[in-house]
Length: 221
Image (cartoon, rainbow, N blue to C red; front, side, top):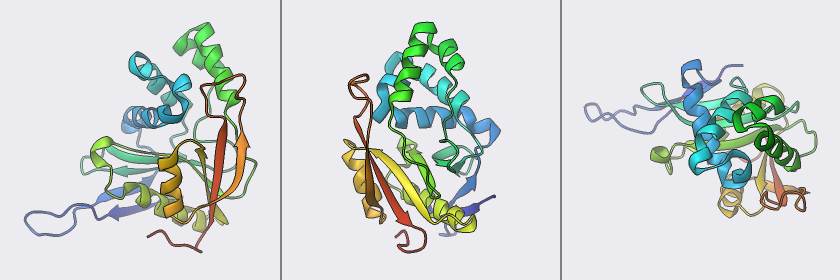
């Protein structure tokens, strides 16, 4: 399924009409490196031991580039066609990221890759669901606080409605208060709390909050 719409964000100084950003399904091939780096920076907030920051940021982006499924994403493109924001999607058969242990070893070395693979396995995964899972939202710094996150949730709801999904779901680290507020403001309610392998991986959040909202029952503002 393809989604294309405009996000009225800016106005032309000549005409005063909205210029808009385009929302579409799938990451364009030429933008996959940029999208991977953007998503890796967002993921590092909750999974820094896995993705890595600082000197490891580039390898983290490389890992995301190989692990992500470009077709399972919604993106907002700016006027130049560059990714300004994206949301990973999961359809019940795995998340937006599908890491490969061998690839992780190639990126971080045998020991480093194996440790990150174990850390990935320690991240608590939600139960199977018919809901459309929004598997993380990432917005470029210069485009934050412009409603792009909400626009992606709107597009995800349209996608869910068109494909017969009964609800939207998000899974958020329990210590990420800002993300929990964001989803709550969009009408999502907690439905479960998942427990991770805290003793094995103390730097990965112990709990994940599962939040859902039935499709069509609480329109995104």
